[in-house]
Length: 403
Image (tube, rainbow, N blue to C red; front, side):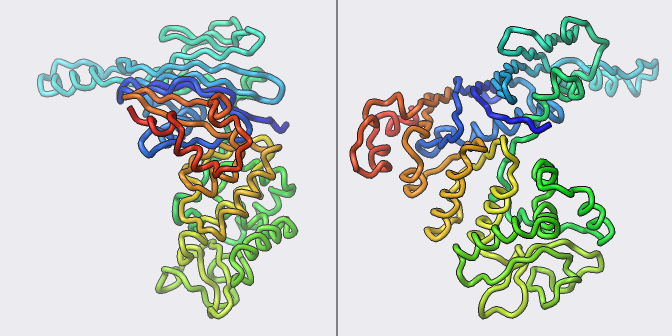
């Protein structure tokens, strides 16, 4: 089953670092704007940390609490959680050997992380009620479970929890800023052949959200060439000198590969490379300019993003020139009926080309971060042809972004 996912509301508190995010509502397209230092990236990091808490563990979130309202298909779920420090449950055996007393004392005072949480459906039904001492699932008290893992992970196979787990797996935090994200991966041909058989539909491939991007791109090329050709055509439209894109193990490229490897290693590596007019051989991703690399990552992510997921991109415009931004922005706008986007940007082109009603203006007063909708600001309720970016800069809400 394919779960449609959107975040409706989010609130976050980090008591260790003494900062908080007041409740922010999200639509299908969200552009976080504001002065540098107001907290736009903190919001992105808080979303990433919350997803990790849901799907992995809460060990790095001691002292944090949050509320996230999630829509998964037709149901709405409210996840309230708090992570506290608690004494370790597994105390070492106390011995009479004095040489171990100090070590034992240190071990006994070590703290672990415990998550306290509730998951409530919009009709009021409590799915999970969890305190330090007990775990209640659908009204039934359960035996003690791992206290540093969320109920979303622990009960992910249960019908009432599975939609939340599957929905949160469909967060995509863009790899475009993680250069080189189209990295080399050690692989063998037998393994690649097995994967090609396993991912025999485009839907299966798109929903493999934890797979390295270069590997997904390879499977797209091998199994779904029409879709892969769309990536190549879009990329060539932006970079007219590029004549081809190919993903292969280095030893199988039919020409010289210009890469950061002086000598091709004995372990075969999967790599993506491009051909350009006037350049001999293939140019591997680690040799591309940051703009060419980031554009390619955006295109692959957008083409492969499964319907009903969230794409989160911090500082969307980074490394993208004026020849890149229009096409990438247009492709995102085309997919807003299928995907939810949470973006941050300072760039006039991006801001001017995303409708005002999708702006979220971020402000910070001391350690408190607040987000207001552009639609709630009277000065923006105008049909003026004035540059929207200039209008934004002149707003009191923007100019007073850090107080």
